[in-house]
Image (tube, rainbow, N blue to C red; front, side, top):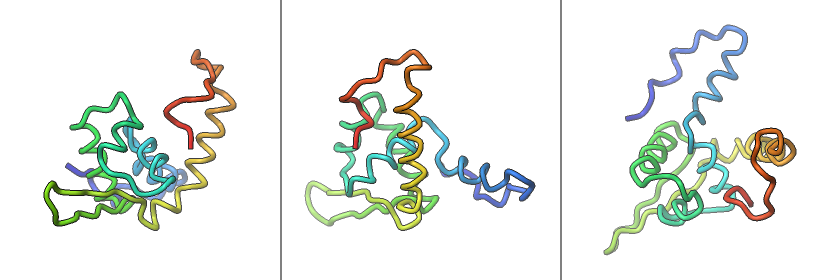
Amino acid sequence: MAKIKHSRFDCTPGCAVEAAIGLIDGKWKSIVLFHLLSGTLRFNEIRRQIANVTPRMLTNQLRELEADGLIARKIYAQVPPKVEYSLSPLGRSMEPILLALKNWGDENIDLYGKPHMRQNACTA
């Protein structure tokens, strides 16, 4: 189920930050968006790139991202069904933010006990 729309924000200082974080909160949403920066992907392609996500959780996260207008879902009428996910223009506008988060993470990951690896799930 999608979250309550953003009318709950009272527009006090920091409201815009709260709204932006609200769109990408959750363990997997920002990671899904990051992987979609490289182009259109099918469900199982996304799942392979995010090894620890369960199919149910990925489905829920994709539904919320679609409901919030950050991704587009295209269904092809064929057997078996083919569904592709891509960034919407609104989702694409988050590219500089996602890349900045990745760069910050690359620079600071050693501070949080995880070794910096050349090949990991977050390479683009």
